[in-house]
Image (tube, rainbow, N blue to C red; front, side, top):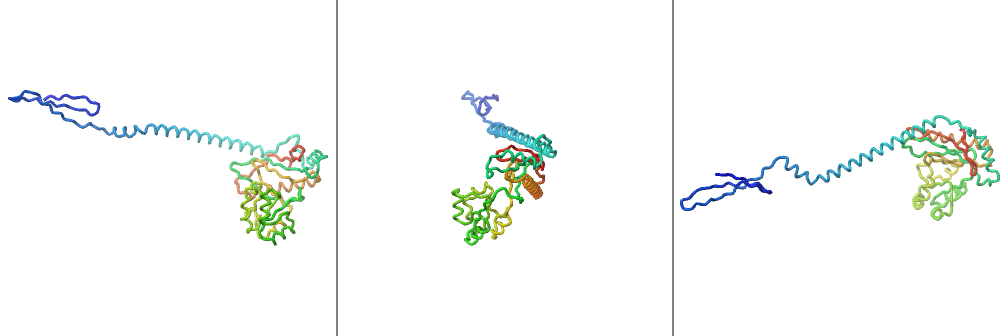
Length: 306
C-alpha cells in the first residue's frame, strides 16, 4: 500500500492507493480518504481578530487624540494657575507710582477736568482691579452711601392696586401690574431698582430676559420680593448695589458737583461695603484688590490710596 499526499488550497487530502490483483481483472482501484483539516488554538483567535484590526487601530488613534487634548487642558490649567498666583502676589504689595494720590487730591484734578461740562452728565466712578482666585464666582453686595450721586428710580410690581398706590406715595417712580410689565416690554420706562410682591412674580416671566441681564429681576434670594414692599422702599433708600464683572468692579459713587470731602466719604463707605461683601462670601480664597482707580466722565483715571 502506497500513500501519496495531494496538495490542495482548501483541504489537504491524502490518497491511499490499494493495488490488488484479481485472477480475472488486472486494474488498479483507488480509494480516496478525506481527512479533516487540523486546527490549533491560535487559529480561532486569529480569525476573530482579523476583521477587528481596523477598529482597533481607530480606537488607538482616538485614545491618542484624547490624551493629547487632556494634556493641552492640563497645560492651560497650569498656566492659568501660575498667572493667577502671580497676579495675587503682586496685588499683596501696594504699587507706588508717581500718579498715586489720596482721594481728595484726585477728586480736585477730576473736578478740574470737568469744567464747562453739564453737572447732570458728569459723574465720578470708582473701578477696582481684582486679582481673583481660581473658579471664583461673581461677588455681589450692597452699600449705603452717605450721599447718593443721583436720584434712583424704583419700580414696584404688584397685582394689588392698593399696594401699588402705597408704593407710589412711598417714593416709587413706577408701580403696577400687567400695565407696568407691558411698558417694560416696550422699553417705555427705565429704572435702577425693582421690587415685587410674591403674587406678581408670574407676571414677570415675560420680562425675565430683559431685567435679568441688568440685575433688575426681583428675587427672594436678593431680598427684593416681599409682601411689605413699602418697607423695602424705605430701607433701600440710599443703598447702592454692586457686582463684579470679570476681574473688575465699577460703580458710580459721586458727581463732580460734590465737594472733595463728600467724594472721599463716599469712597470710604464703598470700600467698607466691598470688604464686608468679601467677608460674607462663601469662597475659600478672597479676591485681592490690585488697583483702585478714580475717574470722571470726560477726565482721566487716577490711581488712589483707599
